[in-house]
Amino acid sequence: MIQFREDIAWVCAADGKRTPFDNQQLIGSIQRAIGDQLLAESIANAIYRYACDTNTISTAEIAKLVVTALTLFGLADCANAYRHRDRFAEIRLDQLAGSETFELGFYRQLDHALRSLTAPARLNLSGLRVCVMRLRGAQRWGEGCRTLADEIVGFVRDRIQQASIEVTE
Image 1 (cartoon, rainbow, N blue to C red):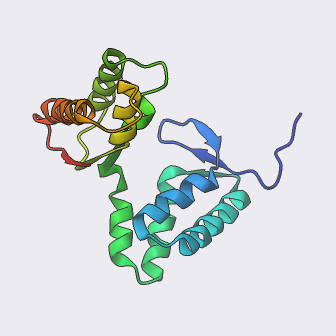
Image 2 (cartoon, helix red, strand yellow; image 1 turned 30 degrees about the horizontal axis):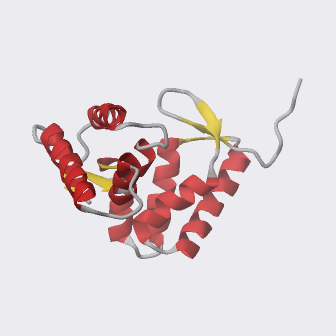
């Protein structure tokens, strides 16, 4: 029988699936809520040590510990933002537009990504400029790039018009 290493912690999702604890992902999640990398690292490291002691921790318990820690540090507004972090979604347009992706494939992937959203309160689109440059194969930003960027934004707005999703660019 293979024994677990003492410094490995497992995270149990709501569906029962267990994955290794990803400290960097937790740091990024906390940092987006509070904007302070050092404090985010400290909180994430403390939760990681706790998770190692218990061997398995649920995602709900991790969220509860983060909110409690932020509240103890006097960051109640950040704790509230972290508590509602699942109401935010991000689509990285530059990642959807790979080097072998043509416009039709890009729009298909974007449509799939938009349909998979569960009506978050806010959608953040990032990487529009890089995405357009890849799709156009352009070295410089020109009128064709501007037109394609407007078409992509229009496509996103059309797809989410029925849902109550706020788009930020």
